[in-house]
Length: 195
Length: 159
Image (tube, rainbow over all chains, first blue to last red):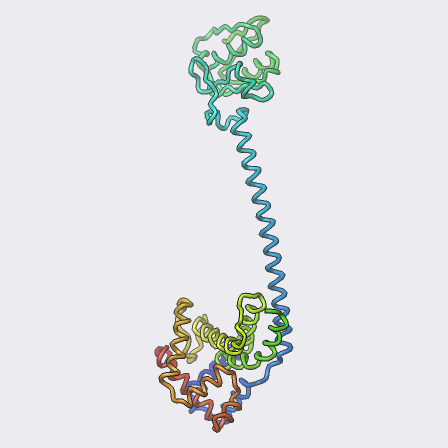
């Protein structure tokens, strides 16, 4: 128990039970309570405390402004990114969004036909998302002026997600398609053969 | 309120305010904090004083803040009599008004004067003794009786 608490206890006990204390003890306590404080020093302490609070308040205000500007920037950026994703189907995040891309005549899940590409694609890129290999290769074959032959009928219905850039050569496209484990395409001068 | 004006009030009333706080809290630092908080509120423009009411406002504020501190102290000091579980500040304000009414209705005229001189005007024990024509020890005993009566009425568990 600290001395301060002891003195407090004594003070409150003197208040409640003055009969237990001598006049001298009460006089001493009253002298202590009526000590004249150093008012000038107290004012200086108050000024220092007030300045500190003012600085802290000002600093907090600046922090809030910076935070608000930062959050604003993030929100604007997020809106911009969201807008880009909504209007740029190169992203595969929402191909079935508010501006649906027409599906192929065969009704595949997602298919961006050649005639629409100028409207919806950047840098002559097409996205095949869960589209049968048959449809993909016919579209590509038309573009590269070759024919397609399926040696294995089941291969027609294999579905892939594939991004096709028209700027790529046919050899390169075949090479990339052959990276799929289930696909084996042979490139001939005028024909693509799917084995 | 301009800072110069606040400083003038501080110089004029600080000693009395501090005395009231010490009479109730005993602790020097706590007493200074109570008075400083009131002037900080003035410096930040959170309180506007009506001309002619400054002294009454300042001393009443000290008394009220001290009562609240005593009631909300986290470590009860045995025998302080004002220590109770924390409740809301509206209840505190009502309690303070009730205490003033109790003093006016249940204490003798001399005790009312002594209560007012010490807690509302911040007079020293010496000044009260001179005003009442009694000894300082008698003033202490009167104040002791006043506080006991208030505790009996408002915080009987502490007795």
